[in-house]
Length: 376
Image (cartoon, rainbow, N blue to C red):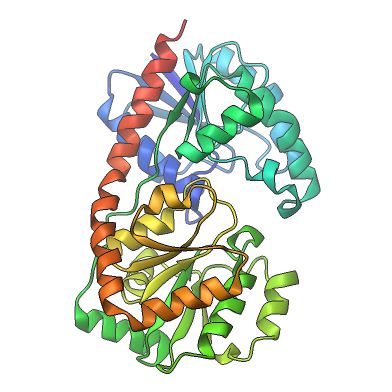
């Protein structure tokens, strides 16, 4: 069988959530199923790093831009032509972007519907495009895969897709994330916080990550903190404006916040593993990979009680209302002073993390692919 896959999220040195899902799952799928041929469809150039085995061929389709008009041209006009030209048997979209003109069986991986819940967090042209076409792509799909039970229910309720047509394929975590030695932790703290303890946030400074409330919560915590604890924020400051900048500018304990910017995975592993806890008070998530990374790094978690986060973190987190500065501050105070509580959360995380691995992701994705192939 010849299977075409939209892999436009595979961009060298720029893998993020969708990109890591695509990279880690498809690498395993194509290597473990040499009986099938795969055509990877890129849009920003083909890189040999992503040609995972001999049964993978690749093409690049124009235009290279990730904008609504470019997406429309690629997926509504060029993609159907490509699928006919190569006599494709099955099409998979790993990032949810699909076509209304598909004439072959297709599996659409829709990670979340954040643009439906919070369109104000996207440029208006993207929000409009997604709201117009995602319902059509979902209804046109032979099957749908998504990354949490929360997202499965969301797709079902918003788009009227039957539950038995949607498969849950959890994300995994890089194998590098694990506990490190006491000396490595001390060295990491010395590098980033002059040897002091800290909470950590990992992710882009996007509005949905709720950084403004995290900063305000940390500021309230600092008023009671007697250990000179810091907050380390790891991620790009691309969205440094509006409420985030305002919250930071108004902080009393502004000097206790350290921004690292983007860091490589090895450094991120050390930063995460050396923290008191991950502080992840996001307003909306389809999955939340940093939660699994924190469980593997064996640290406690503070998480929002919203969307999929309780499903993913299970009993390994203290949950807070993401809009409550006081709840965020109180959770930080508890974890900074109660070593027994931190230990209990870490131990529960060791159990919860067994649900998530990239091999499990690949296995479940393949089951979804087989269901799509066999659909009537």
